[in-house]
Length: 145
Image (cartoon, rainbow, N blue to C red):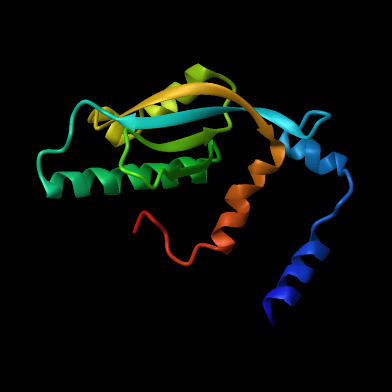
C-alpha cells in the first residue's frame, strides 16, 4: 500500500462531522476544546556528577513518563531539540494544578533537582486526548528502553 492509499484509508476512518459521543468521551466543550495543565521542564540547579548517574536518571525519567502516559494522566511529552535551559514539555489531563504538581513530583529528575517544572493552565483541542491511543501505532521502539 502506498502513502496515498494509506492516507485515504485513515481519512475513511475519521469522521469529518461533529460526533457528540466522541466529544463527551474526550471532555470537549462546544468548541471542541478542553482545559489541560502544561508543564515546562527547565534545567534544574543540580547536574548529575557522572555520566552513569545521568544515564540512570534519564532512564528513570523516561520510565516515569511512560508510567504517567499508561495511567492516562499524561497526554503528551517531549524534549526541545536545542541545548537551552528549557528542556521539554508535558501535557497533563488533570483536574487541578495541585494534582499535576503531585504527578510532576513523581519524576526522578525532579526529585534529583536536575529538572524543575513550571505549570500553566492551558486551553487546547480535546482531540489531543487521542494521542496516547494513536502513538503506539507509530512507535516502533519505546523511548524508555
